[in-house]
Length: 367
Image 1 (spheres, rainbow, N blue to C red):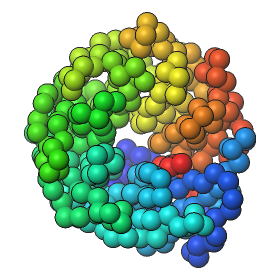
Image 2: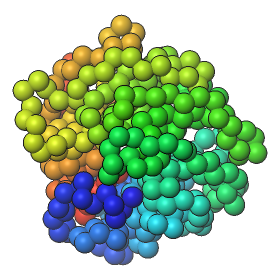
Image 3: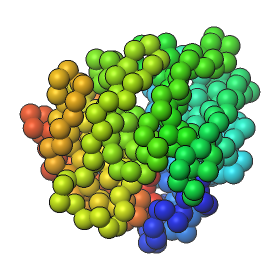
Image 4: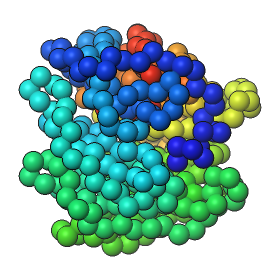
């Protein structure tokens, strides 16, 4: 939720606004940047950038103005989909032109409050509504636009944290590696819910995996083998290794996302978790400690070992992503108005800072 979560996000300094006019994107790789448009110093829509495939250096190319609070953005081919994280939650569909510049197709209500994550799966866009603790489903039209909502499921439950877990707070929705099941991570209930997605867009409950009370699960990522998943817990700064089989998660190993000698203040809030394409390493963003934790994957995915926590080169890294090769990692540093790029050592998994790009309140990087 935008308003209630501000107290946990820290003060955000004023950033430089990208140009309002949409410049023609440059040849090469492109990036699309999520932000908050309703925050002081925030952006004016979805930021556009190009980046060097070798170094990851970003360069601003414009803005798709008028898309409110696009805090999470995904790209699928020539389409973009962005949440509109606001009380009357919505999701916006865009078409990417030959010049790389997206144009809005349409916007649909999610039926929930403050959607903060979405996924495209089997011809549907699924959105996680944080404040209302629900998941919505929209069919994708032939032109890439969104049809009327097909389903809305509401989670139930709460957790021990009276400020963050007074009720359900859906924070992520994603398909499993087989495409047969859909998982929804709920910070408020310390749960991961799994569903089947029908051809009509309806979600049928399959299972609910419970994590330790007060963990506050935020996001998860699957190992390429499909038999294990890694869950980032925002409230107790842990990462959980879970076994996985046909919609059923079973939590196992729990370890800190920080080194043993890390300071206890400021409090740390893990955000994004992702797995290298070869399945050998897991990366997690630490907000507060302001680092990217690097874990080695062991025992076929069943265990993790902390390798290092690399300083992120900014403040409050929210979203991180890898390019398709796994050789570049981008970190959206919300509280320092910067996206930092790292070169990834494929053998050790370690990160080396290579460049810094200034943009207003970056909270997501879609490639």
